[in-house]
Length: 187
Image 1 (tube, rainbow, N blue to C red):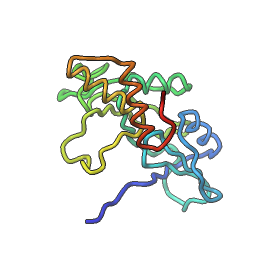
Image 2: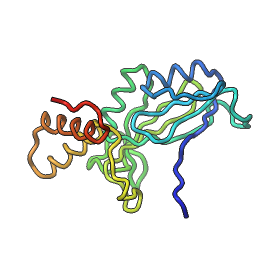
Image 3: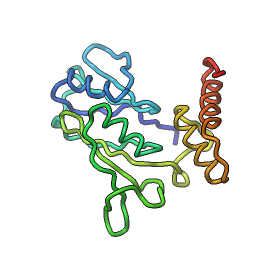
Image 4: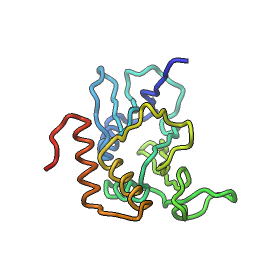
């Protein structure tokens, strides 16, 4: 089979301007689209969301969508969302016995979660993923979406190695990301 990449998810909203303002507060990039379509892309994501009157009519009710957002640090992400005025449920983790309050004690990938909703009630589940399950990522497309993601990965590697210089790791992540993007290198 040829590659198929998820590009856009359409979410049903009742008030386009209100939804556009909400997702803009989250720092999602407003993309250029045809009239009647609003498209926003979360930082670091290759997939966008769309809503608006020009999209094909749907039987989906405003607020009926449920989607996942993968994050490298669920605590930091939750704090950023709360600072932006978003109501985010408390972090919980999944166990064989069911959900438990708080972070996964081992910070294992796919375990720690939190949810929030947009003004229409469309639900977003945050899921902390630092190490993908085998086969989930094509090794030929190894990359980091941002300097923050690369910096977090470098800090995890340094902690595993037993040596941490967070100032240098942050600088190195910014340097490597800028070098890869062809933008101004940090001094």
